[in-house]
Length: 440
Image (cartoon, rainbow, N blue to C red; front, top):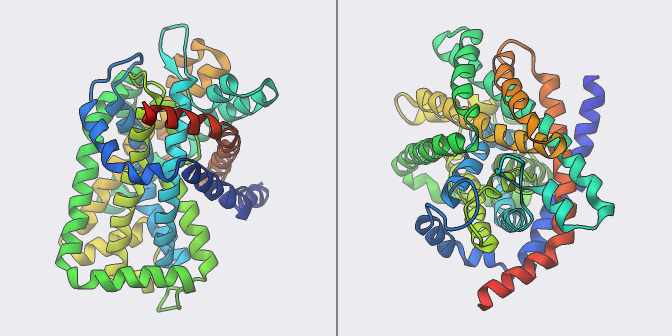
């Protein structure tokens, strides 16, 4: 079974998927005349000036971004970046940057479509995302794609955003403080349940408090390490770019990497981290209190900017500057090693960050899965889904997750396919709406 899923996973995240992800981002970037890069200052201004929102919806535009960031800023920013560099060399970070720059256009288009085609459920809450812009924006012959996305979205979260996250937290706490995994699972279950059972408004409130605090704290720690090794920064950046173009030589326990490996793992881990193209983030942005899809689109694209161009870059630079790749270590252990060498208590920094990042991923993704379940079964699915989500948390701490991880990772790829097809078909709609907004 594992061999079969591994084969499917290799196909799902193979060259065709990477070309589709990057190609969609390039197509949307070009169609928008690279507006998503030119309008970054305006996007931050909109984010700060519209903290409450002035339209229909459940949560503020700011809270919508924080909710989506709570789901995207996760173990991918610590373990995912380290894995990309360990397998693809320093050049993988360069391709993560490229993925983020074109991914901003993808995230922008997702949010524009999500707000434009959202619906209210029987309880008056707003639902949106790929399943709704496929249903309300495309011809009936495409509607099966919306159902497929909702099925994959409902199931994928239980793996990659629930049990895998709780397992990561339990492992790091056991390694650092010998905390029994089940004890970690039960505490997490109570904490996650206290937030998730309160619905999107409670999730967005917690995310609005935790995400800025944890992201800024982690960035500050990274900046401290970089500032104390400032002389190494220019060489590190040159090394990253050169490795992206030519590959990287073997050194110590590091096996070296080709240019293709840098591209493959950089793009794959970049998408895993910022989720541009997966179709998850627009589910949160559809709940924003706004009547302006374009404005929410610009706020949404900041999620990719913050997640990858800021947080992932910081992790990657610390790893390269501290020169820990030759050790041959990978994953969160590599990031921990880099911080441990850089500063006293560095391992504790990574441990705390990993726990917080995993917790916010669990609460953010619960809303994504819930809205997918509502699309499939109506509002009667809300309570059973929330209960199932909370109960699954401790399970992840006591089972072997290799197969679950593979299945969830594959379902993530299957989520992306219907979403990317929809974005390609709705591209002209996004271009037209954008042109009209800025003309007026």
